[in-house]
Image 1 (cartoon, rainbow, N blue to C red):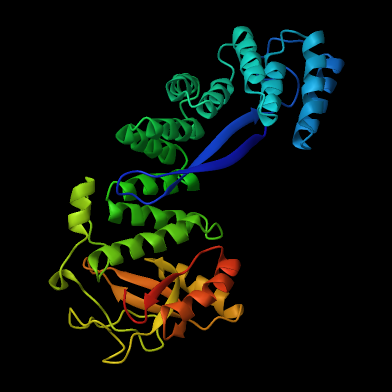
Image 2 (image 1 turned 45 degrees about the horizontal axis):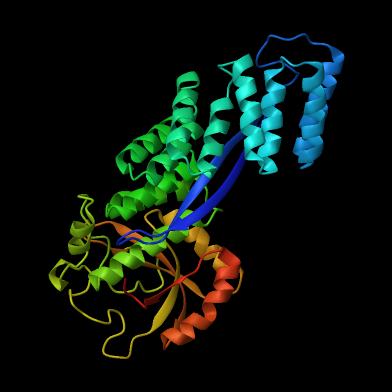
Length: 371
């Protein structure tokens, strides 16, 4: 059995929010070892098996029209093969012939109403057609049939978000993560929603969790760095200071802390150990009265090992990289991976492209030795 996963995205803006990426996981095609293996209603004739296997192979090779033709031949000969209808429907989806796909899925439903994966595929199509209510109806049915389907919960959460039902979306993402604790995109998307709601610390913890699961995919690393940068810019100085109340207006005020609420720190002297906090309100911590010096931040981690690995990767590729350790207002040590020293922001910007090509992350320009 194989699960084909397709990821796509769209970007949208909302009041007082960063642009957010919606990741859409497509639960597409559950291949069977033999024709009728899922429905168990058909004969196991050699021709049926051979045609089914041929269509599966063509689909795997990206020959979607050929797969449609093969499954059509199979359906003509064995019109009660629900899996053939479902698989041909998925091939139609790949060809973006959504109405043809719907017709095939409805035919499969008539033959085998509880066919696994069928309603997820219908949900996907209605999502693409922007009929989110109908998509949710199909995901509801899929979850009834397979309550351990984490992808169905994830996709339903995307539809809920489109309808503005954020609490329901968060509940579905929580369910998806409970079923599949290593579901990287569910964790990231839940973090996105929490960050949008002003629940910055919860979002940061989830991005950290995602980084632990997949250190190669840069999405969570970049989002965590951007989250910290946004909080720092809003506060003027400091770290995550947002409360968990979630309202946009409250989040804005929570992030506008004074110098008394800020806990800045000096840059560590060649070590990765937490540093002593400097007097709150020093504008150029670590730089004395000199003009500010800037550096490029590629990642911000609560886990020291993650920071160390990124540092080693950058050093291996010729970047002068150190780990700056700063403590936030909750007494947590953040390990900030920083490269280079630049006298102006423009000088720093000139070097961002090389770092981005290496890591896939657009580094943030930060004052040396400070948030």
